[in-house]
Image 1 (spheres, helix red, strand yellow):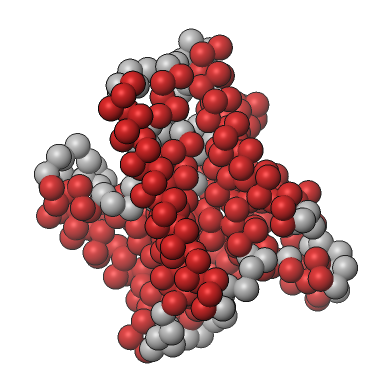
Image 2 (cartoon, rainbow, N blue to C red):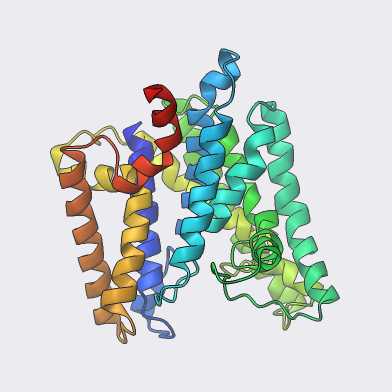
Length: 344
């Protein structure tokens, strides 16, 4: 579905903008520039859940065995690749490790009922943030939120990805599992996309407004250990109101993309190609940041220029690649085990 490719392309662009910077500027233009912060990554994860749901739909309807080997290979590749990429000097918390464990965590849920998926997503959103705070309190707030890399011990890697890292599974699982549920809906129907727009906008705005009201009553949280933190909707705070607001924004964008019928236009082909090669584009932007952009950018103008140039290069590459190949170079690696079985 081209609308999903377009939404994935927008998520990649949003993450490139946020990861490129600049940081620490309070000017109004940067506030606009940072609108994707805490939203683009949730859209990326939500779409990952939808993609996994669509990928395994025959295993639900036709009682076809789940592609266990291919999915576990995908998890291993994303985990190892993410840990290796984290060693580069791009100053980005790589999201591929959590993507890998989210797929692994979701394997028992692929044939669960839709109601069960919603319950799991709800539990992650409601129970995950307090558990995150509780572990903080038990460790005196000594979370090292710097992401782990391939050189760290396995136990530390798992603890980071599940609880203590920048994308804790106990919280981010909500968006991914909700994506699994969305992937079972009739996304091509107009009434479904309308509901996504309305419910997404409602969730995004109401959670943000509720947070503003609660903070005005109880005050700003002053510590990771403070249960008052549960009132926060600050991006990447790992708190419920941020998660609901950010996921609502992602659902809203998805609904808008589903409403648009012009994705077959030649002028939009680069965006579609970028979304179809999202993994390659994501890895590509990390390499560009590490070897060409860092330690900058230092100003808003430099950030916009670096972001625009990166997006343009990746779009052109994706468009040209897709003219000759059906999948991107790194997307091909994800399917390697299946291709080998077919060859035998």
